[in-house]
Length: 305
Image (cartoon, rainbow, N blue to C red; front, top):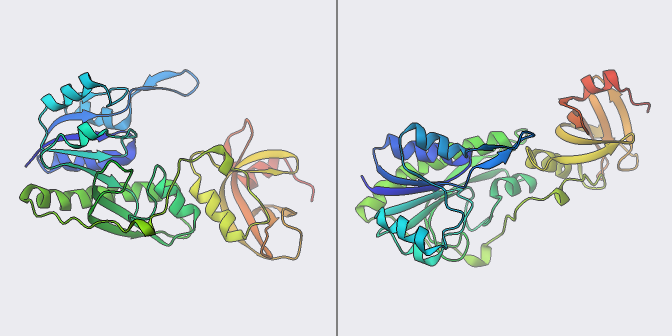
C-alpha cells in the first residue's frame, strides 16, 4: 500500500478515488477545485470529489493554483510516494511533478496518443469513433505526453450518448488504476513512450460547436448531438424557434435540400441532411422551455409543414 495524494474534481474522478480507498491505500490528501457557484441561486457547490473525500474523513485541499510556493510546501509536507490525478482540471508544475518518489500518474480518458487534451470523451464521440478507452500514464510537463503504463479499451455504441460513455469510462479508469498501482508499488510498471507523430488533440468545448450544419452527412450530425451532451448541446433553428437537440434517430433517403423540414408528428421532427438522408429529432428543448420528447413539444406547438 502506498502514501497517495489524489487530485480530481468532477464525477468522472469519483470511481478512481473510491478504488484507492477500497484497495486500502493511505490517502494523505485530496486536492480538488474550489467550490463553485451553481444554478440560479449561485449557491457555492462542492465538487463531487470533495463530497466523497469528506464522507471518508480525508483531508481536502482546494488551492486556486499549484504554482504558489506555499501550496507546494504544504503538498511536500504530506510526503506522498505517488500523486494520482483524474480530471483535476489544473496543470501540475514541474516542482509538483518531481515531488513524489514514484512520480505522478494520470487517469486519462482516451487511448493515447489519440485525444490529448481537455475533452477526449467528447471528441471520440464527435468524430464517430467506434472504440475508445483509458490510459494510465506518467505525467510529464507537456500535456498528456508522458509514457503510458497501461490502457483499457471499451466500444462506443452508435446509439449511446456522452453521459453513458463518460460513466463507463470512469469505471474503466478506476479498474485500470487498480491494475497499475501494484506494478508501481513493486517498481515493475512498464513505460511505453507515446508516438508523438500519431498524437491528436481534444480541445475544450465551446458554444461554437453547437449550431447544426444541415449540409453535413446525417451520421456526422447524429455524432454532434451525442457528443455535446450535457454542454454545450447541439442547437438548431426549426420553424423560426431555436432548440437544443438531445436525441435523434436515423431517417430515410430524401432528395430535398439540406435543412428542409420534411415532417413533424408522433415520430418527431424529420429534417433533410447533406448526404441524401434525413434525420429524426426525437428529444429537444425550446429556448426557455424544458427538455422533452419532440412529439410532446409538437402537441402544444404544431409545425405546419
